[in-house]
Image 1 (cartoon, rainbow, N blue to C red):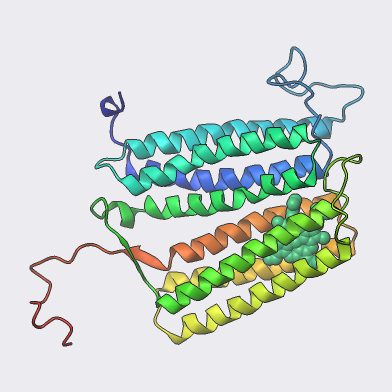
Image 2 (image 1 turned 120 degrees about the horizontal axis):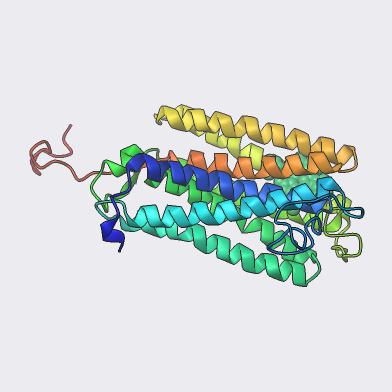
Length: 322
Ligand code: HEM
């Protein structure tokens, strides 16, 4: 049946991949907004918001804000199902077929299904922190994969023959350092979810909190991991400027540094102010944007490696002499 559909235009594929990045990041943020504003029951029924109404309606006991926050989260969830489904369909219809593109696109709807299951378990455990934290953390690989899908569907990638491998566009040592930096970023994010688990936004009022480690200790560990992350970024910066790298790497590196500094400042301010809801929601937005920026930087460190044209390539005996 797919064969009867017209081939996916490259720009459509690229646009859908970008929409997947926004959708995956956006659902994490709206989910956090639902949690910190206590809007989980803003729409008490499903799929209708209220019995007999698909959309919020004035209600004496449920605040309009809570209704719209929960309703907005539901709408974005539906949009994400549509976007990720369209991503996979579009990838299946790119001509000629590209296995890696299809594989990456398939992770998008699969991720949504996994998140739906974890979300269900989270509700069943009454928002227990050990389910809330993974629910957020699963978003991280999904955003990363969505950014790789953007690269895989870029005009440069689609212009190469299917199966073209990616080769490093920067020295391997730089990629290695960047990989270590990304692992520290993951630790920083995990620590952040543990701070939340021990704090006032770790579930509703009755949900037991993480008590094994005191909150200030967790917050300090979280902040120290930021310093480790920043330190490694400084190393990446020095290395990237010392060798020849594509301009995109330098540009994306700078974006990541600026976002990290802003996110760190926001984290400190929200801690000092007693974690007000608005700042916590912005901090979650900052976290997903930082992850997307790190993945964007990583994706610039490789480029398609088209097979050398036999006419242009040097004879084996001469190769490597220049
Ligand atoms: C790049 C730097 C940072 C990143 C990527 C980051 C990321 C995160 C993440 C993912 C969470 C969990 C959100 C959730 O589960 O809903 C979090 C929570 C938190 N972070 Fe950060 N963070 C950063 C820097 C900081 C800094 C420097 C502080 C200052 C101590 C800080 C303070 C907090 C606090 C207090 C929470 C708990 C908020 C709540 O009550 O839910 N963060 N952070």
